[in-house]
Amino acid sequence: MKLIDGKALAETLQLHLKDEVEALVKKGIVPGLVVILVGENPASQVYVRNKEKTALKLGFHSKVVRLPADTSEADLLTLIEEYNQDEAWHGILVQLPLPKHISEEKVLLAIDPNKDVDGFHPMNMGRLWAGNPVMIPSTPAGIMEMFKAYQVDLSGQRAVVVGRSNIVGKPMAQLMMMGNATVTIAHSRTKNLSALTKSADILVVAIGVAKFITADMVKKGAVVIDVGMNRDESLKLCGDVDFDEVKDVARLITPVPGGVGPMTITMLMEQTVRAAQLASQK
Ligand SMILES: Nc1nc(=O)c2c([nH]1)NC[C@@H]1CN(c3ccc(C(=O)N[C@@H](CCC(=O)O)C(=O)O)cc3)C=[N+]21
Ligand SMILES: [Mg+2]
Image 1 (cartoon, rainbow, N blue to C red):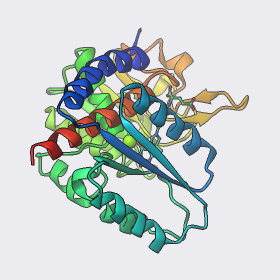
Image 2: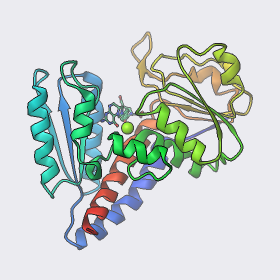
Image 3: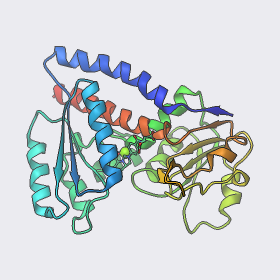
Image 4: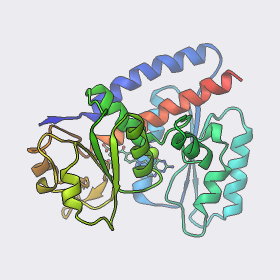
């Protein structure tokens, strides 16, 4: 078994990104990323802090707007519109999940697709599914970078994605299909899930259930990507894959933490740089 070191790869990619930021700054453009966080979800607080830290490290113009949990949908939409109009901000990210009284769909639709560095706007989702992506959701984008760095050739491979979310499972499946893999999306109603996951050359798991994937569910020599971020019995951070046993079966495997998470943040930064570059070409 070999570890896919997401943290190290993220750092390498960030060095390149820093050069790109410097080139933009020389032209008078500072990439700007605003992150909007509604409410006090403790996990979101950690992610948002990581994003802010990385943005500042790369020399971005960065801001986190923290709003109370009872912020109205109308007020949030107004704020988004203000950032849409403000040229200083190239990327706008509204942290998910949102409180129940706010429509996620309305919020994602409100973000200018050119500033939608998450790639969650229906326009960007549509472009991705049409095979001409502009903004790509950062978690799947980061996983594709891992495949590239570790020379995982997807062509002709059988890939299984467990989880069908709009932010990970669906875009992940499409990206691997664009890489010529044969892709199956599995979910909580899938029958004979173990037989399916065991047929996968590439297994990507994004369901949010701690240590759900055990060694008997994995093909010998498979590439295993763990998108999960859970707490185990002792409140330690763990993934959706039982790393300690699956590591002996897999050829390549991502750890949690230090796998997909740092890559997600890095790709978000990359897309913000790209949004700034695109804006400067207009
Ligand atoms: N609009 C939006 N965009 C997102 O990209 C988005 C979101 N909402 N909501 C939540 C998920 C989750 N997510 C993570 C980001 C970083 C780590 C990360 O840095 N993980 C570290 C550990 C962090 C820790 O210590 O808890 C690691 O895996 O090594 C994890 C998860 C972005 N998300
Ligand atoms: Mg993401």
